[in-house]
Every structure is written in structure tokens, then in C-alpha cells.
Length: 111
Length: 114
Image (cartoon, rainbow over all chains, first blue to last red; front, side, top):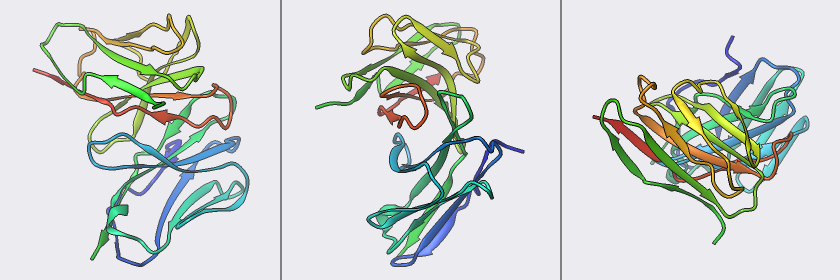
């Protein structure tokens, strides 16, 4: 089992819809979770961080963490064409001062 | 402006050459990281440093070397021992190496071996 798993996509959603991106992980001791957005040819930029179970909202973005089920998700409400990018899930594994990244999910928001 | 700079943006290397990628940050961050990204892949950690004059190997350190002589700078050398160096190289930094530290990325260097 990979340490961090994401569906590579592409996930296609119409403009204005909710995009749901999921990530599962294997290390139960992971404490910190991050979602990065990466446009083609560019570097990743931080969208959300989440550390405790439940939901965390920031504008159109909501991160959801369920440590018991070992998954973290990102919801994007009112999706816009500018949201079309690859979304990388990252987490800090137990006692490690470094992040482990998933391979990313490519999101396409269609007009 | 505070941030992370990487140079050059594009780099071409002949087989058998060593090349050095620059990474500088003025965020006063203690920790710095180097990642490699191949097409359609996630980020893989090459080296990281939590403090000046100290660094640790990441998951794919073979064929690479680093130094951390100054807090602001963390250059990466891609040596001739790296058999497949063509990739997108990303430098990142964070406030500390401990849990919950968010990493911020530079713009990246795209290395191509001719």
C-alpha cells in the first residue's frame, strides 16, 4: 500500500458544481495534513492545512479529516475554470520532520 | 518581498557534467527541502536541512549533494552519478522541521539532460 494515495483523475466537474478530492493514507500516526494546488509547469501552492478531525473551511475550500478511517478530503464549492489544476495531498508521518506527497488528482472544471 | 527564489529557471546539462541549482529564501525559515518531480508524479524528497550546517538524506538522495552553510541558502548539486536527472526540481522552506510546519515552495528549476 502506498503511503499516500490519490486518484490521478482527471476529475471533471461543471462550472459552479462541487469538486470532491480524496486522499487516503497508511500511517495512523500522521498528525498534519496539507492540500496543495499545482498549475501545469508551476510550483505547488498551499490551499489548506488541517490537523484535527472534522471540517475546516476557508472561503470556497473545505478540508475534511477522518483519522479513524485514514482519509482526508478537499471540497471546492462553486468550482471555477481557474480551479483547474492538480491537487496534491501531503502529510507529515509519525516522528518525521518531512512531508510525504501523493501523486495528485487532476481537476478539470468545464464551462 | 519575502519569498523563495530558485535559479536558473531552465538548465541544460550534458551527460557527465555536475550542475548546481540555487535556492535562496528570505523568510527566516530554519528548514529547507529539495524535491524532484517527474511528469505525472508526486514530489519525492531528495535532501532536507533543519538547521545550518546539518542536513539529512531524503528518499532519493543518490546522485545528489547539498550544503547548508547559511540559513538563507540550500544549493543542490546534481552529479554525474545521477543516472536520470531530467526533472522539475523544487526547493521549499518552513519555519521549523517539527510537526505542523507548513512548507512553501520556490518557482522551481527544470533540468534537462542533453
